[in-house]
Length: 235
Image 1 (cartoon, rainbow, N blue to C red):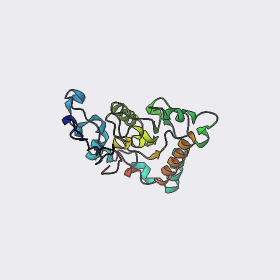
Image 2: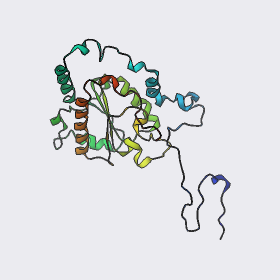
Image 3: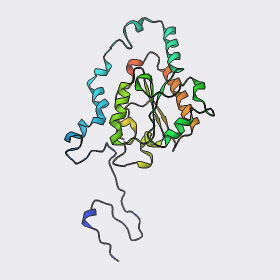
Image 4: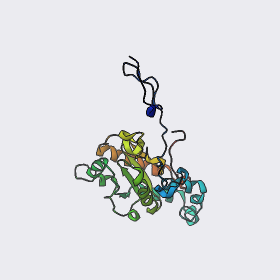
């Protein structure tokens, strides 16, 4: 029996009589942009508000020495610099940023059973100006990306990002979805990835311990920190 194709679906792969697909469907993994000219002020993808950090990184303005890392701090002896990073690593203040089901696991890390405070990670803050670690727990949609970037920009330096869960790392269950950002490293820099759907509280604690190690390993290299998205090219 011959199989007829609807002209509306001419861009889809051919289907064999046994139901198998002849050629795979290839979908570009880029930030979604709407065809509606009223959305986002009718801006093209290059001017998308979710790519604000990428444009800021391209200008080089974020690399200007504004005395946060240079100036008097450059004269501090190396051993004193080690002490400063030890203080930073053992006094992490995460920001409340639960977006989906991973947030339940993130909350449970502060319960008496897990007690994340034992490792110098204090209770979660409700204000970005009192936090230095942004734990993104859950699915990041295109609509929520802009407010999340705003929270990140309001956090004081030095600061770090932890991607918790498959949806946050790469899109997870919503891979190739038009409304989901396929990994938060497409819109902001990420320091630690914690896979899982969802990760257990122990996984988050382990990831935060890895962040503590990363903070100490980056001593003397703060000016080289990532400012824009850290997604690998070609993905």
